[in-house]
Image (cartoon, rainbow, N blue to C red; front, side, top):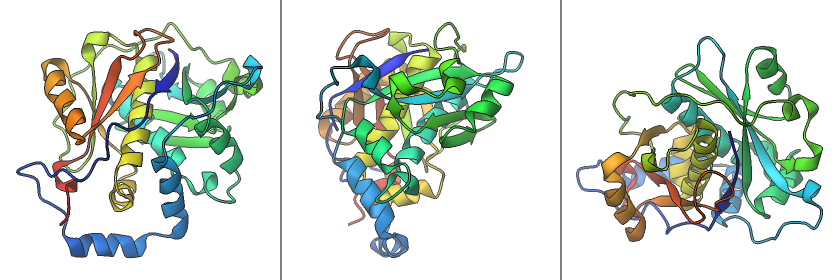
Length: 283
């Protein structure tokens, strides 16, 4: 698995382009959603929408900030790869929108210190008692179709909880699977299959992608997404990658460009996040 860094910011604001054939959300429906929003949710989304990074690395390497992500991969019955990646993506954005990272929340300062420096994620494997111990560390766990991932509150790499530090980073992978149909009501995170990323590298990348997509979407859309537990579909893009890249250039999708510290070349576009067609311009 991989220590991973996000390079760059949003590839345009998503949500203003309505794909033909999709059922647009009505203005009255958006008004209803807006009425359910609280100021805390709006503030957390606004922070996410500001983008990431801006601050350089500290002089002391031990103070470099990272979000640890723990993937539950039992030895005898590993989860499906796409489900595990979907759980990792949902866990990452769920933590970023959790009330505890918002104004006056108990995790606020740790989260903001990470978000406003360089965005790094480290994916680790856990099984058995290790997984149970990881769930005792501050963070958010998401389960998707039996696959579980936990995003932990970020902090300095020199001060990682011992229960997490001992978890394996490299050496584990899961073979690609053949997932079922895409849910048309949820976002899709398309992974560039030509890059051959390990499951740990891909988990960090889809975690970046879900954050970018949430920051680019209007807050009403993110609230709607939150009612689904931030679930999304993760798929290998294959030959449709070039078509998806055009969506990024049009501002109808978000893209993750990797800093290139592990597995892929610097600047590689690794994941493209596409909202459902029905999340187009409600007007």
